[in-house]
Length: 276
Image 1 (cartoon, rainbow, N blue to C red):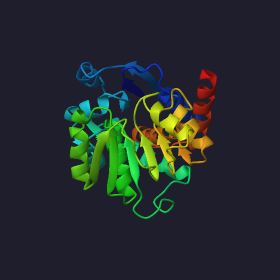
Image 2 (cartoon, helix red, strand yellow; image 1 turned 180 degrees about the vertical axis):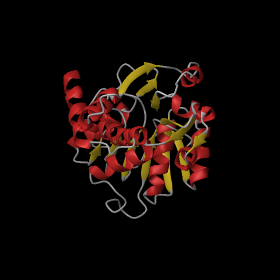
Image 3 (tube, rainbow, N blue to C red; image 1 turned 120 degrees about the horizontal axis):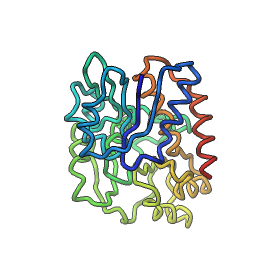
Image 4 (tube, helix red, strand yellow; image 1 turned 90 degrees about the vertical axis):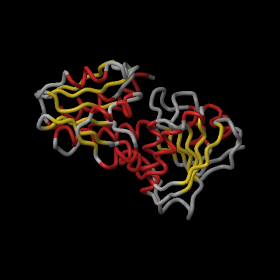
């Protein structure tokens, strides 16, 4: 059976390393998983070309939203978040799933960040307003957080995020990306590499000290943001934590088998170490 991760750019993706390690650990010798360069324009034709020998697809930006009209079924979580990072082919149908949300929750919990570790009515700041930010909203709802602030690089393009917040029953204060903020109890960065450097500098200068940090970036790894937060003593979940746990969900959806977490973790960390 075939599976792949799609995105543009995609050469940096660690997903093949994680999924291939899981295949080896479980002896799934008939399975393949590759990275395929694919943008929004090419997505419909690529999905249409996937025959019965295809188990599923992992999707990176900018495809998590673009795939929704191409699906036969969308799980409620993906519909609420307005983003599907996983397509599973079954009985001739395309099923859309979101494993980013449970992956976010698992990544936070693994680092001791949960609804019980945060104070009552925690202050939360999300950096960015894209598809991963929308998944973060769904994860925050699962933590019983109903109000938060989003620092958007382009507030005029945050309409999808605001619509997601409405579906989830969340209240959002939208602010400019570089605006000053009081230190939140939880900072979640969903922006690309180096885009959060402003906040890394603030943390390094001790003018902005969040209680806990999640940064979705894993290349480069560690990021300036996670490095500064660790040096400041904050609990940190990083992009590799998220990538690993969302891949666990994808693997289980595609293969029907429990994912071997530790072999996947070991292979992913070794690949990151090789990248320096």
